[in-house]
Image (cartoon, rainbow, N blue to C red; front, side):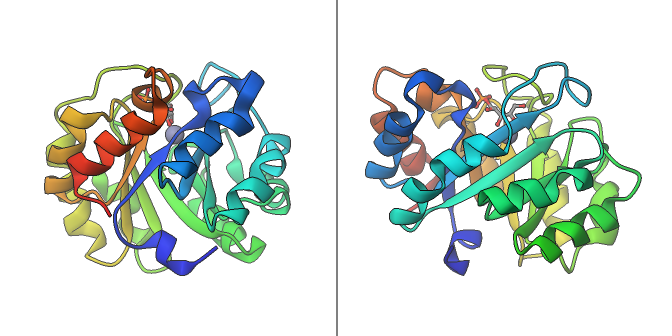
Length: 226
Ligand code: DX5
Ligand code: ZN
């Protein structure tokens, strides 16, 4: 993975809303349209109620995404994420995002991610204060602000997130990527960018659209990405 994929503005299609029966094809539609960050949502039925997918889905997409110079980011909505880091890194995750609420050992979890060779990201839920990330600034490549409650695609964007994004940006400084996830579409992406977000996860806005490539490009345009 090129380091530039952790910098700059990126729209990251989330495969949560893709058709899993033709996952490779759906990912190709968005990479052909220019997407280079593919977002993989992992849910364990404990941290969040639903169950989704595990390392085999990452392995299955690895080659296809690498071939276009892209990266796979894995959003772990699982309890004690540190227990799963090695498996996802082995499967080919380039960036692994853990939740601050999912372990008493956030520092250890982030350290484990870096030890695995992947870049480390730290996510917070809507009700978690910005201060939860303050001790992790410095060695964390990306911070993720959930703009809906984690667990389901297709929920409406939480409007108060805009103020939170701005406060998060103040806390983490200019260096790290600041990602938003949940309810991101053409209307909400622009205000998030104005508040300081640099990375925009979109699931249903892309894969529930009739033309995912077109929907991807519309969000790119809304945030002014290349
Ligand atoms: C939800 C996941 C998101 C999800 C977003 O818990 O973390 O990545 O795919 O879905 P939309 O874009 O439909 O809100
Ligand atoms: Zn996600």
